[in-house]
Length: 430
Image (cartoon, rainbow, N blue to C red):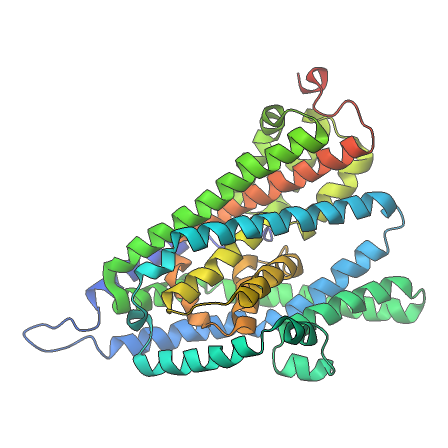
C-alpha cells in the first residue's frame, strides 16, 4: 500500500518503546519529594507531536486531489477496460464498503475507546469546546446537508475550508472529464496533475523521514497523559482491527469466491500464500505487485488479459483493509474523547473511508493521511492519532496483506464471470 521507499521499522519500534517508557516515567501528576518536575514536559511533547501532525496534514489536500484526478483520468482513458472495468469497479466498491461496515460493527460492539477517560486525553475546557463544535457539526450532518457538502458551490472555498467531501467529488469529476476531452490542452492539465502528485509523494517521503521522531513525541504525550493504562485500550483497538481483518479475509471474501466465482477458497489461499507473506513483510502493495501477478496468473490460472489489468489497478484503487482500519480508528478516537456520533455522521465516516482509501493509495503511510481527511471532515481531533500510532506499523503489515488478497479475489471473480474455466482448476494449481 505504500511506496518502495520505506522507513526502517526498527527506528520506529525503538521510538515507540522510548515513547512508552519516557512518557510513563514523566507522567503528569508524578512528583519527586513532593515536587512536580514533569509538568513542563507535557507541553514539550505536545508541541513537537503537533508539528509532525501539521506536516502530515499539510500534504493532504494537494495529494488527495492530484491522486484522485490522475487515477480517474487513467481509468477513463483505458479503451480496453469496458466491461471488465465496470466489473472491477463494482467489486472494489462493494468489498471496500463491506470491509468498512465489518469494521464499524466490531468497533461499536467492542468499544475499544470507551476504556479511556476523556479527561485523560484533553482538558475539560477543550472537551467542552470540542463537543459544542461537534454538536453544530452534527446538526449540519443531515443527509441533505451532507449532499450539499459533497457538491460545493465554490471549489476554491472548499479548498480553503478543507471540505474534503467537496474536494474529492470535484477531483473525481475533473479527472473523468479530462479523460473525455481529447486535445493537447487536457493532456497538459493531466501532466500538471501528475507532476503535483509526484512532487507531493516526494514531499510525503520527506515528512516520513521524521516518522520516528514524530511517533516518539506522540506516544510520549499519550503516555504522560494516561500512563500505562492506555495500553489496555490500545490492546482492545488492535483486537478490534484484527477481528475485522479476520472476518473480512476468512469469511466475507471466501463466501464470494465460493458462491459467486464457484471456486475453492482454500485452494485460492494456497495459491496466494507467497504474495500474502511478501505483502505482510514489506507492508507495500507496490513492492508485492510482481509476486501478486505471478501468483494470480501462474498459480491461480487467471489469464494474462485479466490479470494485467485488474491487479495493477487494484494496487492503486482497492484498499479494503486500509478503509476498514481508517473507519475503526476514527470511531476509536470519537469514543476516547467521549463523543457520541449520530448514524448520519457514522455514515459520513463510511463514505469518507471508502473514497479516501482510493484517493491516497500508494502513498507512504497512506492510512494516516486518509485518516486525517476523515477526522478533519467530521471535526474530530487529529491529535487522537497519538492514541494508537504505537501499533500502526504492525497493523500496516496486516492491512497490506488484506489489500493484496482482496485484489487477487477480484481477479478470480472477474475471470470466472468472463467464462474462464481453468481458474483454480486442480491441474493448474498442481
